[in-house]
Length: 324
Image (tube, rainbow, N blue to C red; front, side, top):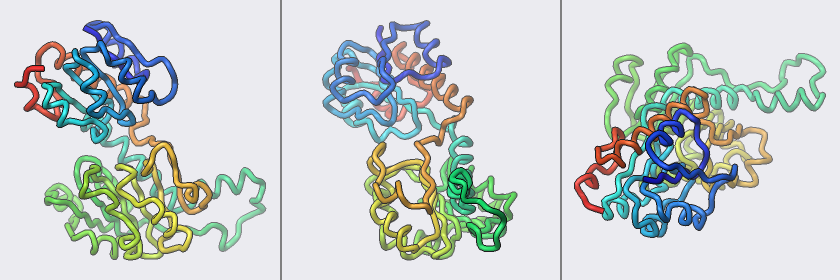
């Protein structure tokens, strides 16, 4: 059997695949185009893809032998799961393994945006630092403030739990209660509007869906405190990017820290020039340990699926009983 991999992944995964299958890896250090993916998967039994790859109906129906799609990510909104299921193709993801790494990055963005660290770094490198000054790049203090978590799943909960060292008051909004946060942090579940108005720091951790697309737009940004810091490590389209650029330019909020973008990898031109936004190139899972574990998990899903077993992290188990 043959597996097509759309980008070189850590050897922890590739070596497992090569023990079981013929493996064809996209050879270039860039995103493959849709036609390139179609060409690569044409005679493949398995497809190991990234979140950035458009695995839509055209791709899926162009691969008559395809039986398994394993994404090297937690999110799978780039995959037409309905079409895959219709054709009896299993789809898997890599949940849980990147929880702490992404929560850590959310904190890195929060602290960097609150204390203006990248701005200060540039200031120093440009030779502008001439000595301590009372009003030099003052930022927002974190300790004792209110943290708002939008989406209290694995990553959102991990982000909240890491706030204990800062003795923060925690609010969260979610479709269901999180007993762990309420027990450990005395966190309070509130409607989104209340969270936006009360929180000093807001971190977004929701999946992308029709209900969360542009969840944060002009109206929501205007509800926030002018001292608020907004962090997004979930999905770019959850925030209306032009609205955020306006909010930062006009100081509706203090600052933002972003790891994902609405039209990734393209970033809104105004965000590239604003000093009060910290920009990271989608680094949520970018630790050596996590990326290796993701590769291993994706490979294990692929191996199970192509050997006729239900993958450990299958997102469409109903396809398991379907024939291709």
